[in-house]
Length: 80
Image (cartoon, rainbow, N blue to C red; front, side, top):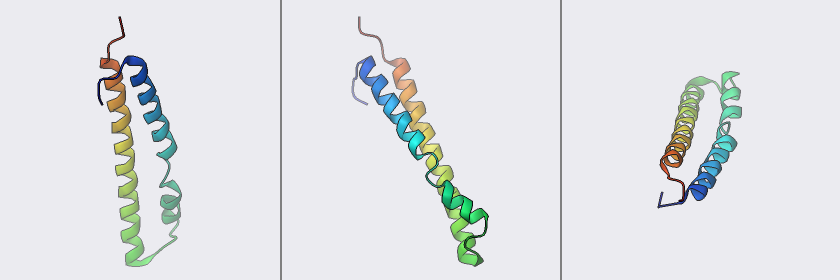
């Protein structure tokens, strides 16, 4: 992120956290359906594997974005 002052960086970090919170559960309904055998057979098994992998990947990316923003905020000096 470009050189932001501490307050701007705090606002960015809070926005990233809110977006993460909003999207953390995005794939949960589909994963729950698949755990209850909503779609069976070889295609269902492949989809189940893929949607769970996508959920893990999404959550990892969201966690990384939040962590990165927090680290940037922690390293941003206060204005004198």
